[in-house]
Length: 254
Ligand SMILES: O=C(CO)COP(=O)(O)O
Image (tube, rainbow, N blue to C red):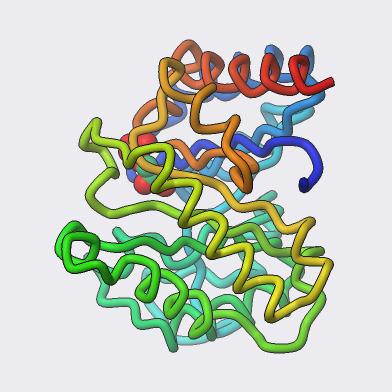
């Protein structure tokens, strides 16, 4: 079992400075639940402001460019995100793959760029509903990971994987706990093949319609080491419900 559960909020394209009060409230409450590691990935425009606002929780970016600098209008490099206060970056989110046509090869280059700059990586993977219905979910997810991860590297020090079935994102639909556990077990198996025993320390998050109401059941599953939360991370009230569920789970395990 990896270390503390990791609960990460992905604000996606939401948030102006008015939302800094939510970040502050999340940070203050999280300080009372140190058994849980909490982080937020606000849009680029808020990384620096959230970083300044919080004391305890981690701050990250939702993407970065694969190159370090240059003539790439509108893009942000890993070093720029780091400089703004990010300590990690979410890469390969299905919304980036779909909306921006990001390929596994590009995501692999972004992972390398993030590592080069010193950012931790939350690497997302997940199947479509058609792929699940066709019985191809596991092969697809493991293929995404194999294509984006370096073969020989001490990944447990910097890597978190997030399994997010596309059909569960923002829909209120969640896979069965058996299906989540099976996929997380398969991902753990792949990481162990690639990185050996150290893969036990790599956290594998579940993402897709996680809420306070379903968090405890999901977080209790084998090989589920936390959650990547979209909609329910936008208010402190909703997000902290998930943080508290994770903290209670740790208390029960203790
Ligand atoms: O995509 C997600 C997090 O990255 C999940 O989003 P929802 O929690 O809104 O389903």
